Length: 247
Image 1 (tube, rainbow, N blue to C red):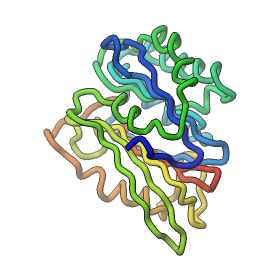
Image 2: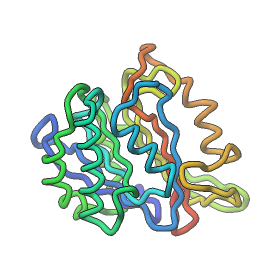
Image 3: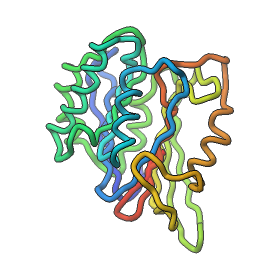
């Protein structure tokens, strides 16, 4: 699985010791300029800090970086959690050529505890230095919490005479009751938009990926529980080479 790759996407992983020492728990995904990004978020009225910040950032412009931490959900943490979340975006901007508003933060793990931002800031340079196109396998494990195994898949399809690659990873084994609950999902493709117009945060109702998510994804359930933190996100990176699209 280490040969998974999508042009325009690089992933870096580091060990911040957020919950356990010696475990990969911080993932940085770099998205090439020119890529289009859009997302589907949880429909829970009570949203954790990273959900609020990510939804705001993706609505105004295409993202350049995704920052994902496991071990701490930064949920139910009030203003302190919001401050830590915003600070994580600034930290990525400081280490890269992006601006803080071009960073989408994701957190999964223990609720009720403020994100230990100092730990993330300390190892973020390691994640940046680890950026490579073939890091999907390691990243799929770094985003796990109670999962028993990583969830990573790749497929090649022909569409309108064009061959394209799709790579996706997700996490979540409980609290995935319908309406976009506790899962995190990240999908990238080099397919481009196939003539469909995409704007920051919105790929349009005609986009196959978004339509499929709304019809199929919210039906997933395992224990009838919702989470306030996850965006199950499905981020759809669409690439208009050199762009990429995420769900």
